[in-house]
Image 1 (cartoon, rainbow, N blue to C red):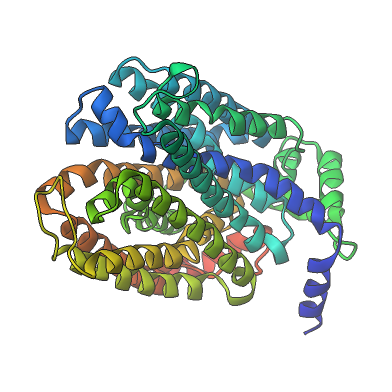
Image 2 (tube, one colour; image 1 turned 90 degrees about the horizontal axis):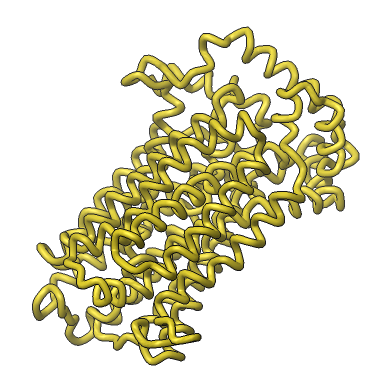
Length: 484
């Protein structure tokens, strides 16, 4: 009881504002993540017309950045352990900056694909480093909320991308119409991303290094200085550094166990939990809404201008509901929120699949008669509500905190790489599935995965609420017999 009161007091202490500021700075990488994920939304049809693409190549051009993201996520964890967190953040910002210009001035589809891959590598790096850095500088009582800032930044990036897409398209009279300096509006949709890339790069050069990395590099005094800026008066930064030193010594003693290899299909059970969390987060189809929503709402019956507006509204919904997760995550815990989200997503995806069974017209010009259009629109936005309040932010929080220290950065990188690959598979498969089966097929498949995610969380996902990172190794060890 006294511990709870102390934790509550610590949460309110002004020193924690510095931890919030550092978490916000790191989470700007999430903004780039969200922006890059959705900026293609408003440009899909224009790119298809400009480069005369079929449905399969269009899907590949949209999704190919995700392969770069997978590589960036895989490499990001390893680079972070060698170079430090801020330096790798800076690398991600540079890659995204270059990609934004290259994509905006692309002269052919293969040129565009190359620059999308470059930007994807940068985004993959940012997606790994932000949750790891936030988890390592955050007080335990605030770690869930600060970790959720990554997803909040992602949703804000999605909103900014869709809003800028809508502005450029509507002011120019269409995404393929000339805009500033005679460039087509869809090109400006990419070029404008140099602004957040620059902000992220500047912030990466100003934030301090992770205490965990500093201790590992034999710089404990610097780690104490960083921790003294973010911990409350009841928390001893030197004691925290001693805890980190002990875990590093333990890691060295267990050097033969520092790999991800384990008895379950070649990997440790906790690594498989992280991988499957990542895969389920994408296999519910959330990014179909944000990558293809403009095209989707035209199928529902909106014209291009109205479809952009509906897409922006959906992104605003995503931002707002993320605050629900931030408010509840350190009070309710991770598992109950994920379970609730799985049930809600299953129901809404089922409604969407049912609505599209009523569609009429060819697959490339679908309309929903009567009330089915509004029903699909409401169900899609409620799906975003359930995702944004649960699986969106909580997966990134769990990936940042659930792994033992000795493998955290590398395991997070592997899990995030799998998330990007899953995202790629869902994104690249949607156009041909839409053409072959209509929208009912893919949405029914996403509903099945949402239902499976409920049972996965129920049986396999550990609760990490209030557990110190330095104690996470014991937490995961206790669950191994049940996970094996």
